[in-house]
Length: 117
Image 1 (cartoon, helix red, strand yellow):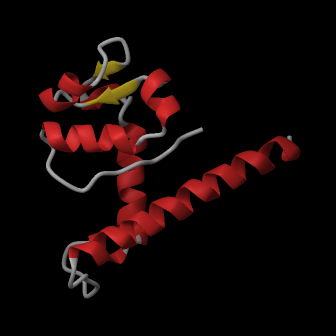
Image 2 (tube, helix red, strand yellow):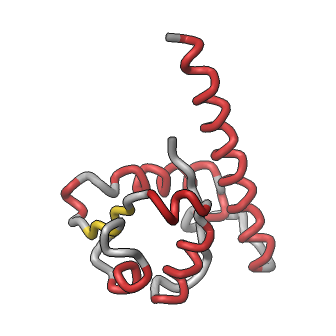
Image 3 (tube, one colour):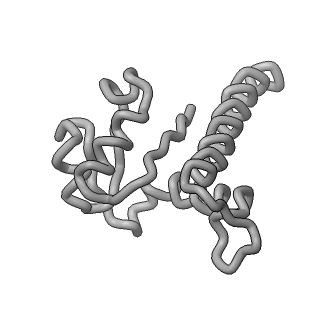
């Protein structure tokens, strides 16, 4: 099962730390993370759980697919849109609301699927 977390900020060390802290504790301890070759991710991730991979490997395709999904469903993230936030807190709130609903839909789907088999 996937758990999507996010952090709004730079892609430097502070942003990587924020993203790592937004993950549930069990994921921080046990999950293997596939990232691009940004040094910020390498600095904050334990080496046994961090795997930098090239884009062509397909290991980052899940997050690329999620980027596309969030762009389609949160109109504020589309270029040249008429939907916008006047405050950054509202913008972050809209993103958080979508991710929260998306995580719940995945959780509900995982509960239903075993019954369908």
